[in-house]
Length: 243
Image 1: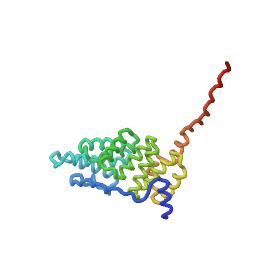
Image 2: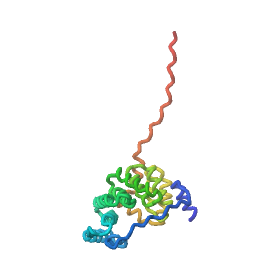
Image 3: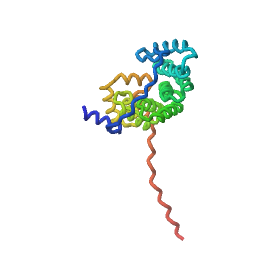
Image 4: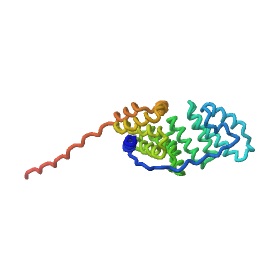
């Protein structure tokens, strides 16, 4: 097994021993307790957020922050439902209320990445979040998807590989790296990484398929890249005419 993992890391182009800082914990608020309940289904979380945000009195201490965090959680829930436009809107509104919260910046990035919309803005959102904590693998993962959507295959591969090197439980990042490898025509590397994904957590493949990102699609993109024309031999200078 150790040799197989080593092969995966070689395919990813990264080394061992990487590790990131622990994720900063977002405060829990009684006023939006169920909205922040990650044990609920996405649809139930959206409903809970709707109810608690509607009932939130403006006299609440730190009203803007509480409301912003609630909208952040609702955005996260909506990103797992068909309402992806709603996820983007909530994340943007949350950012207005809590402008310096890096998790909200990351939510803006993720919502746009999943929706495959406003990718230039999504990249900036991820960049903003990573500027505050460059060691967050979940944001690296989001940045990887944005790069994949934009056709920046090498950047996608690097971001996904870095995310996985920080947190080996993020098998989705591993699969993203495989897709980036296929898009670059690196079939052998893609196959090596894909084998580990299938062993560890094959259901992430279905997640990516739902987002319109597949192995066949990435292989097709690699084939679509036109071959570079062969360089022409340098022409010989014309012989001087006799006098």
